[in-house]
View 1 (cartoon, one colour):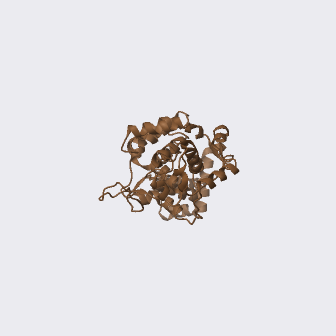
View 2: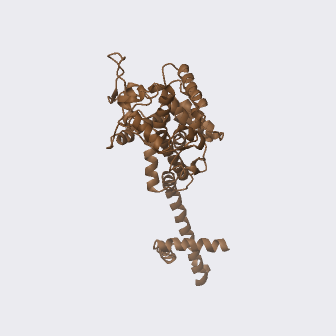
View 3: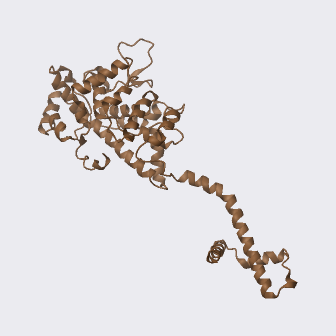
Length: 387
């Protein structure tokens, strides 16, 4: 009986808000001359039956309204809400589906400009670019107490961001000193970019754990779908692509591609990773044939080169297996092991497996994995919750 009273109350409230009353329904029924067998009942019973019929009529209207509007409600909910039960801080549940169906699925209109336009915008920002000499840089590092020995021990990196490599780096005869200077220059840049990804990844999971998202969050998601080349707003794919690249692997590739900072591409174009481009903005290899259309991507600042490198590994179909292996390490609660992940970079260079072995040799000989846990000061304290 209580349930019935509550139901009627809700119905009355609903129709009172919409300016529809029981008396109006009763009036409607009388006008339409619905038969209530009035002769057999007194006025009280007649009024009760009239009220009951009116209430039934109202319930029928409500049911019809629900059936008509429910598809629209469901559609609206799907568009405006993201359910978190299928998304956790790992990718295992959706990994197979994503890798088989989505992770290589790129819209035909997605091209270099589309995926890298935010990087190009960053690279075009006015900067006070000053090319410091190798001696000046070394003195700067010494005066600030920035050295690799302390970093290997304390895992803390001074936030010194240089925009250009010194020309004199190729003149440093001591190969160990040349390597150390190169690592010191690019290490803060690499960690800085990984920090951006960490913060984005944290925000992504925060959004996925909500039942409803704000317009600002939806706009942010749309920008990330674009940056990572994800079609159909596929969140599982975005989770797999939006992830860090191990510091040791990044250093090894930069060292291999630039000869520890001495190559023409690094010196003239801040190109640390030898990425190819067909857009016309780049440096053409001197040994390339006249009909060669590709160039090596050129940047105004070193930071942009690191950004583009990470974007390349996180979006290009050639590195699908790399992203798969990285996601599996995440699922198993393991660190991102560069010696494992480099095995999936055989498509980065024409030498294939030989290239992989060279990278692994560089990592081991120079103990680069010591830098994988390094944090950038002063932001390292803010980012402790992300590791």
